[in-house]
View (cartoon, helix red, strand yellow):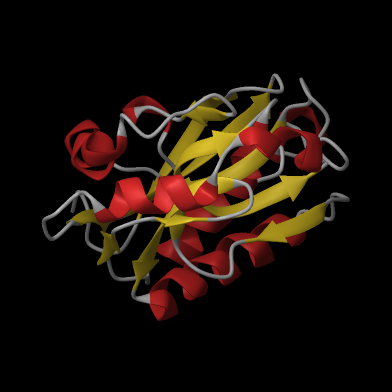
Amino acid sequence: MEDFFAKVGRFWPAGRRDLHWHILPTPAEADSLIAPYQHLVPPGLQNVGAAGMHCTLLHAIGLGRGDVDIDALVKDVASRASTVQPFTLTFDRPAVGSFAIELSGWPGRPFTALVDTVTQATASTGAAFKPGLSRYPHMSTAYTTAGAEHVDPVSLKAALADIDRPLSATVLADRIHLVEQWHDGAHIRREPIAEVLLAGVGA
């Protein structure tokens, strides 16, 4: 496997705070998502932990909080999101990739519509950034870090197969979150900025 943080460091250096739009699980949802996989963290992998679980819609690469009118951006996204109906994402047994242990989710169509919504709104600010779009719903339970080249993906897949029961957990996507997010080369950190409700939530 390869070091995730070394890869992203080429365009997202350690310590730089970029704006991200996420779907975030509730604490109970995050616990259900990650509980079966807490033990799958050999050297070279860094566990995300329940508090760090996130499903990215957009990484606005190179765009920080001070580079844009946050109030105007949030107001625009809230207006656009007010017509988007909430939906449920279902996440199943994870896969072992080159850079993470990743839970893929479905359905993709309403998720992609949200990606388009926040991307268009962020682009409408006129601020310069490179859009890092999510092409499908996913969350990582662990990222590769230093020593990733020594991780045996076959052993990880075998450990997943040994979890001998159906695995599925859901996340209600009824709001989206704007955060400022950064990493230190081993962990991803985020600071919340705003929460935007979808149609009918809190009415």
